Length: 272
Image (cartoon, rainbow, N blue to C red; front, side, top):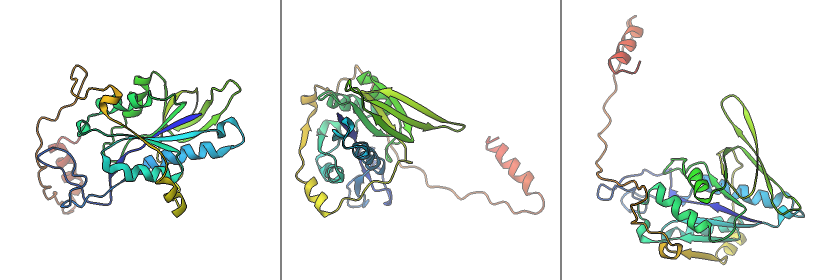
């Protein structure tokens, strides 16, 4: 069985982030902004989920699992990809091409789907959304490209192998009023939520092993994707400007009429 885990390098959320007014893109490695790049936490949880599926019962067919991490990122992101390998993934696929700078969701989904078609994956694991883009749409877009089932926003995930070789996914999803029990046959795309277990911390031996694991690289030409093909829907940034400075809020002194003043403020700003 082969599992693909989509991982993404993102700016460290503990650092102050800044947009470039020239490109309209986030300054990711600019020395002035001090942005440090790390493997997204939800990506680490996705890798951890795959590792736990393999470890659940090593003597069963589900234990015969190969885990590959896949990332569309600049060359410098290899360090973050290696971290996923040091956690226990077997190999990696790194899609890198200068034409992907500032790629929108439609191009990102098209490229990742093309990479996923290079091999027959039984299960594709993603996070619900990345901490920088936070769209939450990519898992559904991938499932549409690949024409496979999608189980999204999962809170639990397990595999039930069968003699036919087609594994069954058993999962759950929490909603406002209930917990849904889900089941589907592979191949499938699943997205996991932040309630999944914390990722393991690789030790020195695992880190060294991760540096030796194979990484396959692809360019857009090798995947057969044209980034400048605008016959497909593409989001194009037309302008960017600095956000206005935040103004001081309105202070209300309670002299017995605070409730009326608050209601008046809300009505004046069309908040109620």
